[in-house]
Image 1 (cartoon, rainbow, N blue to C red):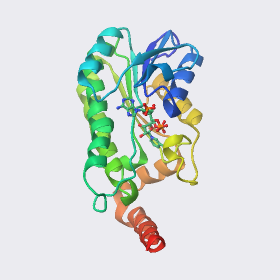
Image 2: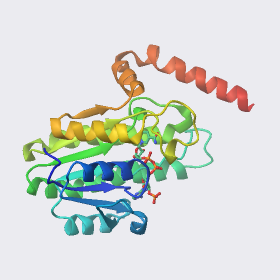
Image 3: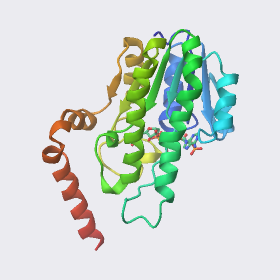
Image 4: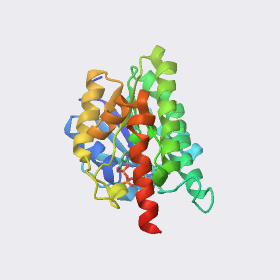
Length: 245
Ligand SMILES: NC(=O)c1ccc[n+]([C@@H]2O[C@H](COP(=O)([O-])OP(=O)(O)OC[C@H]3O[C@@H](n4cnc5c(N)ncnc54)[C@H](OP(=O)(O)O)[C@@H]3O)[C@@H](O)[C@H]2O)c1
């Protein structure tokens, strides 16, 4: 599909990657860019129309699908990362919060907007996933589980919605230079690079974006993950345990 002239909606558009997605859509000539956020007053990007939306509120998700019935491109960007381990975390609160936003919130948006984008010509749904959809690191283990669930969701709805002519794109990246990755000084891809790759994919009809070297390496290594991926993860975890005593 062409972005020029399309009506689009980005979740989590108030900051980070979502703000950059919205900016890139405006610069590519989208007719309308709805910028959805829990606090719509924080959506300040020029040319973007603020919409109040917490994606974990199914009633509000349904309302927004009605209010924004002209959308043909949905970008499910909103997400949370709690840096929570499976075993060491004090309780299930972080794991539940990540699943609630990253999986159930995204699922809820897909369900509400699938008929909307279909009615507007087929359109496209972009789901912002992660390299951690592909493998698990103890440091952000429950986040990885939620992104693996969202990857499964993305592959499932691509099949389910093909008859509507809806393009469904999964986007994977390692660290992106936003607040979410502020704690690490590891290499990070810029949000501008991710946004450009994603909207190039939308226009080219491509179903997957591997936005950095890490996600390309991990995806290519999946059939040998216990040789090529997990030994490094184990070494990293062992070093972290040693450093913290
Ligand atoms: N940064 C990375 O290293 C990285 C790597 C791979 C994938 N990702 C994914 O990329 C996406 C964007 O992340 P980011 O890097 O831009 O992180 P960020 O700077 O922390 O921004 C997260 C965005 O999601 C919004 N959000 C959180 N919970 C929400 C909810 N219940 N309803 C609506 N909006 C909600 C936040 O809104 P508030 O301002 O209200 O909190 C914020 O706008 C996420 O899906 C993330 O998992 C990030």
